[in-house]
Image: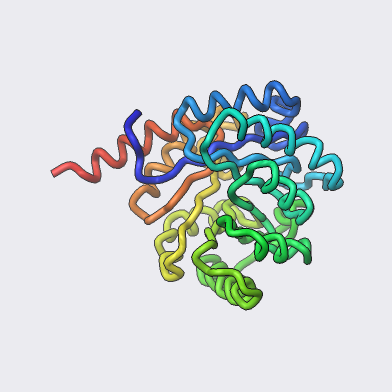
Length: 269
């Protein structure tokens, strides 16, 4: 299988209520099967999450989140060697996921929600994805506002990186996610996508997480989330020359094709 320069993170939502595929992989067997399909399609990383972060989602208690994700992570690790990311804001879930075989922590609160998360990060050596979000999933899409969305998110990352490194964590473990769709309007999302290269000022890997999101439907008129994979792949290809390290998507195969085409055109004489 030909390689692509940008790593592809396949989304595995072990939840009943995620915005696009809620319920499809909520059971253990279906989740493990989907993991294998994502890997066969070319995923470089699997991102396992047990709590929906869609707009207005209800929170999930720690025990339920653990029940959803830990058996799946263990089963994937027994069968596959690729990196596994745990998508959580809870320190207990992150710690147990690492013990079960996860290799990356993906925290949409940028380590701010759970005061104990920084201790889990400091006690490990794994990469950590920190994301920008204005508000919380329960209120982030209620009239989000920025004077300059790119500049303000750069300021946010500067503050979070300073705080995290001040706690003794090596900055080179960090991966930045500008949080497409998390407290952003259509124009905010488009501005961020157009100016992703601005985040190269940090000299840290950048993750793009735009898969199947509402702004794609607003532009294309496609309301069914599962039918937005073509739009998702197009955006990934358009961003291929903006130094993106990884892209987080539901449909790995479609995105992989788009990235192969983008790289072929870019490298042509």
